[in-house]
Length: 498
Image (cartoon, rainbow, N blue to C red; front, side, top):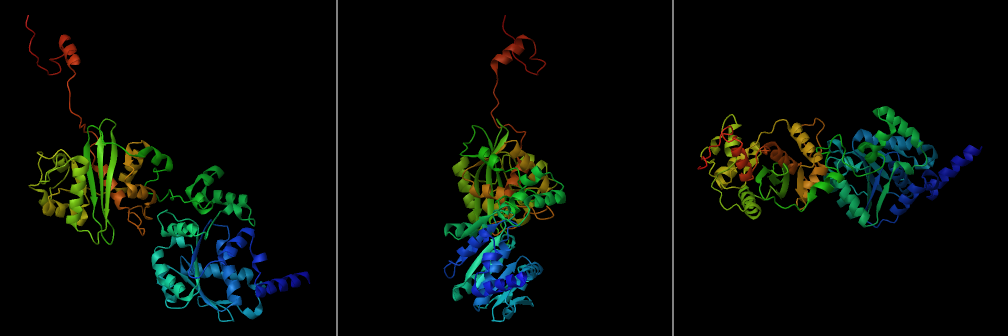
């Protein structure tokens, strides 16, 4: 009898619009209350950890509204199968409490209401989300938005629809694998407009937190301390913006490392300058890094970066900018197609490319010592032959091994970055390996192009070369002569007159 009364009371709560009072916890009720104040055509963002109930709260809010008013909406997850399973699980959890006359059911990927309201349930895989293009939707829920391969493409479908209907949208997700994902940009915008929620697993009053921790420790074979310190835990359960260390290309670039290695570094008194160039393809930028080897400290200082839109920047314009920066930074004033470091570089090649023949000589400008570039995009040939800027093709094998060397240089504090290299510093944090650890993952901003340039530099720096001028310690030479060591050393000094 009591159970029947409770059930009827809950059905009544849906009809009267206060089901959230029992269906949601205090924190979730606050999130939903703020959503009800959203102005037309606006978006909110929830960066909330796993096991906190963000999806459940968003679906409860939408189900409540669709039962009381007739309109269309969309719920998106990363895949079609995942989206359907999530909505079906939510429905099973609450369907007994829903008013029977609402007749809510999931049919052919649509959550249908007897009133005529519909919530399309789609994934971003196989362009499923485009099935709702052109429909007048008033509610869009982008679940797992931080893991969409192309969030802007999804937005191109649904943002215009909300603008014509006066509807509202919600991004909701745990943090992305890389802070470069555009979901984080949407969160920053939402925070500025006071439409942002950040919450963690610890706030959920309905779960046994320690049981979850024990389960994760068993699953991953970690101690409690190791688990709580891992980037996966911090990102998924603490909702922190951290790069997933198992996929990070440069995990050594921590906040502590950046604090020690980023600065307004001055050029050392003696150095060899190096450049790495990577041509943009399929929309990637033309990228260049400029660095100097400091022999006194045996470290590499990255002094400058170039990142130019490949769609509107010709190789000539790119080459001109490289020359201008060389002149400003290193005092280079001639480019006859010569390189001081060419002989040693050529000695390491099996075969000298045809376009380099006649362009290399040791009678070269002092700086840069060496320019290298990606050999697969014809930039070396075009810059050398057409624009008089000799760029030698660098080997590219064993990419992971080279990145390991970059990480080791950072740990040893032997790779410094000038503060003006903003994009390089960003990519040091955001660049991820693909699942096979062969290439860098593409994100909407870049493809780790400046990290590629950094790899070219590190691969080709002549760490053994000391560019400082040789000097003679006359006191030491006199001592050796008096001790009769000059002949052993191969030094022939005139005999002192007696």
